[in-house]
Amino acid sequence: MTITIDELCDRLGITQAILEEEFRGRQASYDLQAKWYDRRSLPSTKAVAPIVCEQLQSVETAVELGAGTGLRVLYYALNNPTTQFLAIDNDRNATDILKERVRKLRVPNLRVQTKDMYDLKDKYAAVIALDCFFYPSEDDAITQWGASCMHFGRLVDTSQDKAFFCVPFYDQLGSRYEMTEPYAVSVFQEVGLRQLDAMPFEFVQRDDTRWSGRMLLARP
View 1 (cartoon, helix red, strand yellow):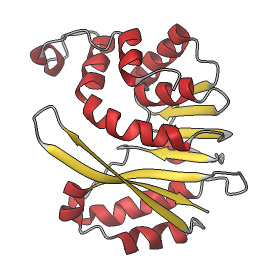
View 2 (cartoon, one colour):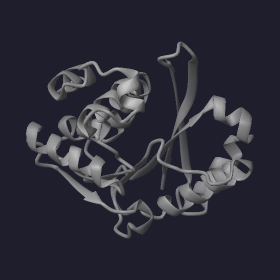
View 3 (tube, rainbow, N blue to C red):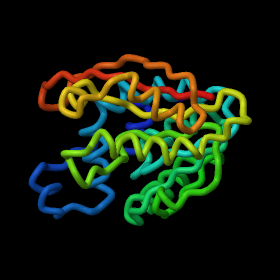
View 4 (cartoon, rainbow, N blue to C red):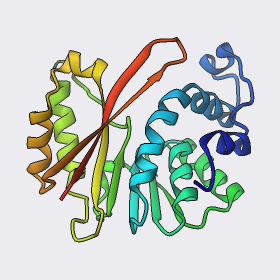
């Protein structure tokens, strides 16, 4: 790898402290709030981002949906310099921070768009959807998860070598939503992604709770 996640955090100043009350009360600048969030999500990022990053080797194009302030997509782009990346998010505050990070780190293979990811029409060899789905109804969350995966799975350019769609599924959520692997397979087969690999991961949250799950990689 060209850069580790810890090295990237150091270069972006994510280790800078910000008090919980400052974040919750929105008393800090958006830049500091973003760094606070990035640091809080580091256990998850360190578990799932390397899995995705390895799969991106030799992939021509990739999009990260709901990229936020872009810690993960910056890590992917720096470690896969021949891949052309798009990061998309509908929060202009977040994309402004990401654009500034791209300039600071001089990442030539990463474009940033402020846009609703559901309006995306272009196809990409890799479509990355990490923790970006919103479920209006918790009672029907697994169906909504499936609908989102089906929608974005259609963006995968199946003519490309190593094309894939990736989305994590957490065991803690599976017990609540009754997620089954046959259901996931049926979702992706509907859009022509017939091979499903499940790569396990686990991490310890900041509150010391242990999480485990599988990175689902759907391929043509």
